[in-house]
Length: 204
Image (cartoon, rainbow, N blue to C red; front, side, top):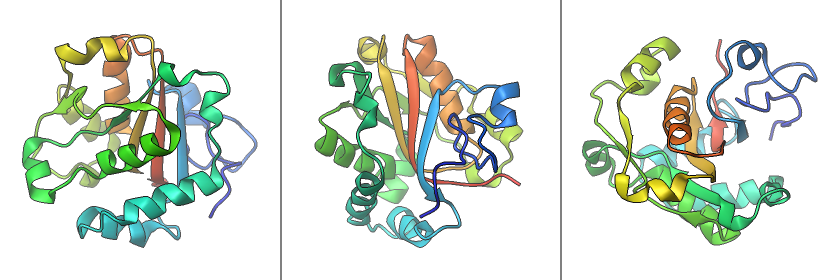
């Protein structure tokens, strides 16, 4: 595994220095406050994440979360009470969920919740379907297309207020999806947003 030491605290991109935040996050801070990742996208776990996400290898989620807790402790609780934290998956549209058969973020969420005792919920956020694969788009295109994709269910707004929301996902590419979600959650009263992602793509 690659060291977390030289990653930007906020977006988890390699900084190649001892700076806590990369120049991009200093100049144009995202709405999320922190990002923690296991490894880079081209690292040792890439094949496992691909098999998990695209070949229905749901059991691989257990190995990914086991690896997570071997590397990271539950430091999130040092300054926060468990009832102040909410775990949320990156939602899939109904069409994408039907095509894939499962939400890879939700499966990871359930394992994190079982290990930590953090409250989780699958339906706080909903997502409209986009025909284009987001992974093939640049950051600006992603941001434009994601502007009105996510919604917070009126039934669960109170779950978000004053919470530290932990968003769980498998791969973070440009960060546009997580940023769009974070902007919406903070608009509805979330106090802090932390991303827990398995892999972080290095932008070039």
